[in-house]
Length: 259
Image (cartoon, rainbow, N blue to C red; front, side, top):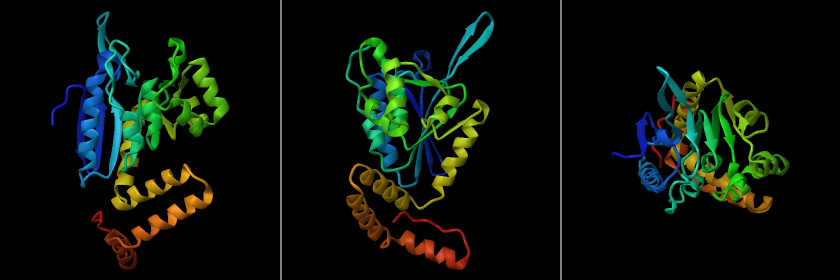
């Protein structure tokens, strides 16, 4: 399917959604929100895709006879329009399949919040990640006030949100905002390698284990342990579990069926 504001690629059980509004630093408008929703639904229904990567295209301009490249994941909500945006952040947060945010350059406002909704955040050292909504008299209303404290702790989250100041990729790694920060020339390879590693796991195991973590985190320990056991009992009944045991005994790579 052809899209106006995003690109979708599928290869080797990994899908990649690339924001493609570089002239607006991949700001999220109503069209991008709708197209993102459609792409997420399409990928969710594709049994041949185990992992999703989300990233953004850079803005490239000619300036004084030279190319000026401005890397960006997303600068957040497009303030030039007031139309409602599809709630894609919550769709990503609730996504069954593992989702990786690959940030090179700006990830601000809603772009940062979208990354926080992903399971993993990889960034280049030249990235700028932040929640500047306070500078417009707003708060980060796509989950930023809730997910950032859970990821980096309340004191650091208050500093970022109330000051509105971004952090670079290296500082983001130091405070736990990113899972890995690398040189920008290595980012694509590192993310691709990690996505391929995840894509080599049993798809139903990936989904159900992610479900156990997410559901358990939002409750008390005893309730979480009950959720874990319930999901474990489901996995024990799957063909993939039987295949995993057989492959181990036969000293071969498993052939997952996703059921």
